[in-house]
Length: 338
Image (cartoon, rainbow, N blue to C red):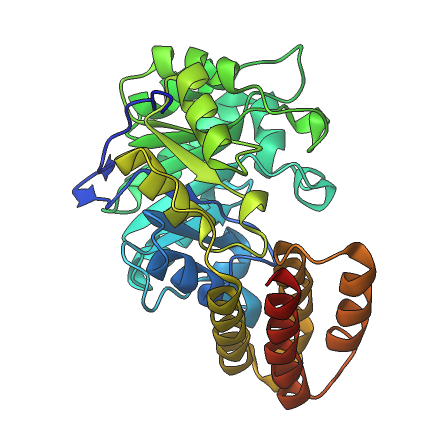
């Protein structure tokens, strides 16, 4: 058996001791409450809310409030984004009032709709302003504050180590680094080795993020970065069990593998049911379609068969038929795999 990088059984954020150091990334449109609660039940050490715009949270907009719900997730982490000190300060106070145990600051989102408003990773172009926002959050909450970033805006501004040092200096207690620049978006491969520069620049825990889709990816990311933990993002599409699977493999040295197809089917159906309850039948089913497609892909069926099932399940407007169809799909997948 190949040696496995040492990883803490527990990762500490303030007074919170996590069960393991594998975190589910915040992903807009994906990590709603049903997905986060499911990933936590399946063994993730920590889950983070979808990005919540601080101004929208202060204005009590329904979608922002829906994102800032953490029933059944402990510790409950709300991720805030914004570009104005007053909104970030008030957003931090409201997040705490809503029950957040930890507040994460988004300075890593590369989406144009976010950076175009000078939020997310655009803040890495102006570290003075970025620091003013971090200070505003830290000063207006009693909760631990963490920070998520990229390597920098582009390869001419690889300033993540500097931002991490500044953030630690004003009270941030953990940083997560995605091993790409903003200008890379999700192109190429994440540079896990670069994250070691951040790890060497601070004394607080550092979490490595980007392209961690397998147990081997997790091992290599830890080896190259020297990080204290890992964050799983797109690798968990259709696989909410992946953070827990990685955590088990790193703790025991044995990869438990994915759940059986029968168990995957039970997980998928239960997830969609929870989405229907959380978002309502119509809206919940529309939001569930991307997850259904991802679950189907995890089954290992041929592309031709997947296309037929995806067309059937992702175009039906009747939730009951969709749920019955998902059960049929997994029965079919099991028969073909036998």
